[in-house]
Amino acid sequence: MTTTSSLSTRVTTAFISDLHLDGSRPAATAAFVQWLQGPALQLDRLYILGDLFEYWIGDDDPDPHHRAVRDALRNYTRTMPRVWFMAGNRDFQIGELFLRETGIQQLPDPSLIEVGGISVLIAHGDRLCTDDVSYQRFRRFAQHPSMLKFYRSLPFFLRRRLVNTARERSHSAKLDKSAEIMDVNQAAVENALRRYRVHTLLHGHTHRPGEHQFELEGREATRIVLGDWYRNGPVMYWDDEGRRVETLTFADA
Image (cartoon, rainbow, N blue to C red; front, side, top):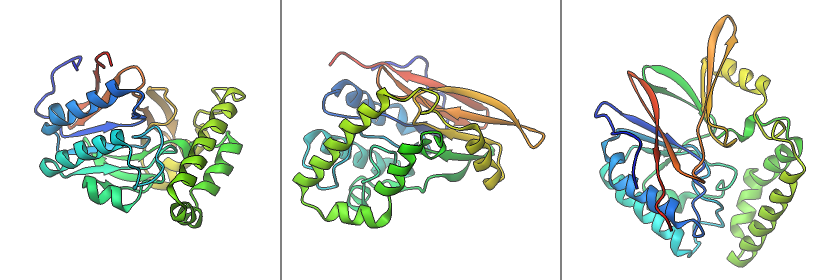
């Protein structure tokens, strides 16, 4: 694993999202674990903004790959306990057992935090994709507290079957949708910022990293999008002097 530049000692906060860790991509997982054991030890705070895993069947999943990630997080939080996790659309079934075993804390989506001297609204991002009506309808159904309770009560083999079916249907549905429909809706972004009375939004989900400036109630507003971990591992560092992205390079599996 290599990084594009050295980590400054003044960095206090890092953000990552959409790692989609899975046993079929061991190089991404290895890069994440090595990062936790090295550069990440210099942080004061780490925020994981959803889709840490490609899928999550349940906290009782015996998958050795998922267990390795849990162990790495547990070892990390013993040294640096200020780690927050926000569920994404792939791992919203993560429950209390996982949180206890890893030592990370869960945040609601969205949440307001202070970073780099300013108030920032952080989110996974899928709630803001309001043009994708069918997805929003499914999201409200699948993530309803009563549905989550029912899902977690099912035997593991049934949950695995449901997750596999949902993944297949999601993949098929995306083939018929334009990239614009699956991106965030600008009005939804502005409404969220107004609701929390801030002018900076940071999210993942769309896999379209970048920064977008626009005017909101007479002031400049910024929407920052984190990148995914499919080809490499982008990490956003943020301190009082600004923010930057450093990229972890995946070794060959």
